[in-house]
Every structure is written in C-alpha cells, then in structure tokens.
Length: 509
Image (tube, rainbow, N blue to C red; front, side, top):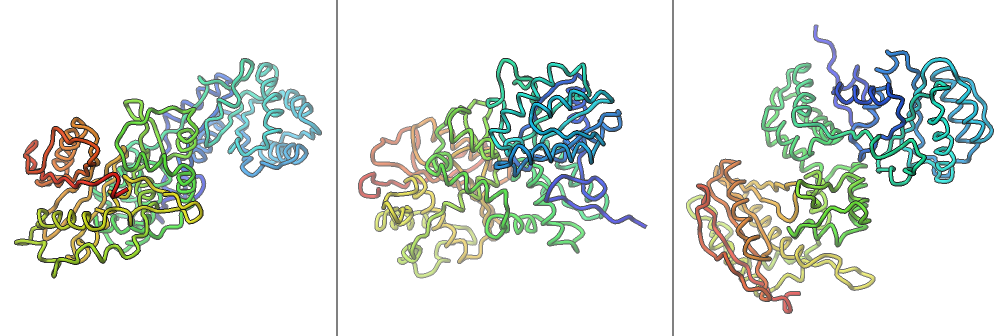
C-alpha cells in the first residue's frame, strides 16, 4: 500500500516528512563549514527563497554533530523593549537547549552567555531587521565582544538572517560580520525545480510533463515559494488528472494574474507603486539601466526580489511572473475606448483570410484608429494633481495590446503573453486554427536597437518552432527612422513582417 503523499508547501518552513523538500546538501555543508570555523555570519535573500527551510535543515545537521542550536525570530520586534527582548532570548535558551540565564540588561546577557562553558552553542536570529534599531546596536555590541572571546565560551557561531542585505548597517572594523561572511541562499536551479516536481510524480503517479516543468521554471525563475505555489495550485485544481496539460498550466497562471490574493505578490506591487515611473521605464523601454545598489529604488526593489543584476551589469527583472503582474496592475482603464477600435469594420472575421489572421488589414485598421483617436485614453492621470501617472511608452503598448485582445476574443483565438526577465519587451503568442504567431512591439530608439529586436524575435520564434513573427514598431515624428522599414524579411528561417505605427509627440502626448 502506497503511503500518503506529501504536499507542496506554500507557507513557512518545510517539514520533510510532510512536504516535498530539496535537502540542498552542498548548501548545508557550506553552512556547516562556516560554523566549524567558528564564524559569525549573515544569511540574506528576498522573501520566499527558502531561508527558513534552509536554516532548519542546517540546524538538524548541526545537532547530529553535538551542537546546541537555538532559533529565534524577531520579525515583530520593532517596538520591543529591552526587558521583553531579554526575556524572549532567555525563554528560548531554556526551552530549546536548557540553558538557564536571567539577564536584566545587555551587558548581563553578554556576561551570562560568556559564562556558558559546556558544549558548542549556535544562535540563529531570523528576521533580524525586524529588531528595534536601538536594541540592534546594543545587541551587536554584545555579539562583537562574545565573538572576540569565543574560544573561552560555548557560543561558537551567531547567524543573522534577513530579507535585506544588512552588511552595510552592521559592518565596521570591529564587527564580526563582514562582506566575506555572508551566505546567500540562491533560488533553485532548473534541475532542482524538476527534482522537486519529480517527487510529486514519484509519490502520486500524477505527471507534470517536461513542457509544464520547463514553464514553471521559467515563469518563477525557480523562486522556491513560487515553484511550490504553482505546483500546489496545479495539483489541487486538477487532482483527478493523471497528466497535467499546458492549458492547465495557463489556467493557473491566469489565476495568479487576476484572482490570487498572495502576500508576496501584494508586497511586490506595493513596493513597485512607490517607484512607478522607474518601474515603468523598465517595463516599457529597453534602454539599459546600470545596476547600482546604492540607488534607493534599485536597492529596495532588489532586496524584495523584483530586480537583479544581469550579466552586463544592468538592471533586469528577476521573476517573469512579477513582471507580468506589474504589467497587468499598471494597465489603465480605457473608458470605453475599445468601442472605437473596429467601428469601420462590419465583421471581425473580415480580418481573417483562409483561416489565417490578415495582419496587413488588422494593423492597417489599427493605424487608422491611432490617427483618429491618438493614445491619450491609455494614459492614467492622478485625480488629485492632474498629472500623468504613467509614461507615454506605456500608452503606446497598452493601446495596441488592448486592440489585439479585443480582436482575439471575438475570433476565439488563444493568446499567451511571454514576459522575459529582461527589460522593455514582451511577446504575445497567438494560436488560431492550429497556426501560431509571435507578436512583439517595440518603440524605435535607434537603428541598432531595431535590428537587434528583429534577431531576438527570429530567435524566439525558432525556439518555439513558429514560422512567422509580427514586429510592430512605434515611431516618433521627432526621430528619423533608419536601418529598418515596413515589409517582410526572412531571418534565420523565420518570416518576419514589420509594421511601423507613427505617432506625433505633440498631438498624441
């Protein structure tokens, strides 16, 4: 009789007996190495990267080597008094490792810990940035003193765990915590994501299939919390299916974008709204932005898991799902503007010829709409100040995508937006009557950028085994377009149809 299967964990640290779990032995061994060397170090990573699961696995391994390990979270200690903090530290030392102390101030805490002589003690403080800043400074001073005398007492290692990189706060010439003593908890690799999903397949017989595993890996960037979240939703919603389909996957992605009430996604949105203009610059333009951690918006959005540094040293979106969520959240209300899109067309199916979408006619109609209406309806204004909240680049892309969405809905075509982790562009995959198309929009900046976009589109079409790509370029009357023109080109075996949509900087914006 097959034992009851475990489940995907979507909240808190994993229990390997109940949850599908990656043991990550190399990473645990690295932590063991730090502790055996009696180093005091930090662990930091954005939320939902598996920090809590990691240090619990590390603690289990250390206990097998006769370490006494105490875990304490100070997440909600922003307003904690000194008396309360000392009481909680004392309670956890007593409860977890039977060490009895009763300090009345921070100096006494230092002294009583220095007096513990038996065994090897490790203290892990989670959510360290949640500690009252005034207490944090005092506590760090005591930890520093204990570090310098660690050969004389049992406290061999202290680990601070947090979601932001606290090295800049705590590093000084006398601090035991320095840039060399930080253990980063990386996202899963694709192989690890496949391994985790494979645990479910082995224990239940329900199959994800390589296509779905690959897509979960891509859309989540292998972020542990999201991998578990996607997988849990799939197996919960389609528990009676032996093999999950790609349509099942798309249904779950749509749920995340439109319906899910998710704490992590809400946090990302709230942070992004604080820096909306900057985030829109990343969403709607492909101009590189150098990654500089001391730039306030980059630091905050990086430590919350939205942005990362790419291989060229520039800012990139970290998780494609977050990029899609932001794109959707910033989408403006169009106040019935869609009624004007097709007012000169009697039947949507006049835009289809021989079961193929007639993009020449479709985009010609869109150009006529732009001449009549411009893009103003797709720009959001602040009700209080009257200033535009969104960039003009957003209005260009929103306008066309709203137009396409309405058309595809009426002819009952399937579509799927593929948001890469880079900047500026998203590809729309369309499936109609068994034929697939890839549509990419871009705002013209300079010739090389337009040509690079062509090659990227051809590469992406080939990766999907799609023979035709649609490349729509918005061109400002303030720039002379060079190096590219409307028409059809074959690039790397892919037929790419190029369309230019001109706009007037003054009239339209």
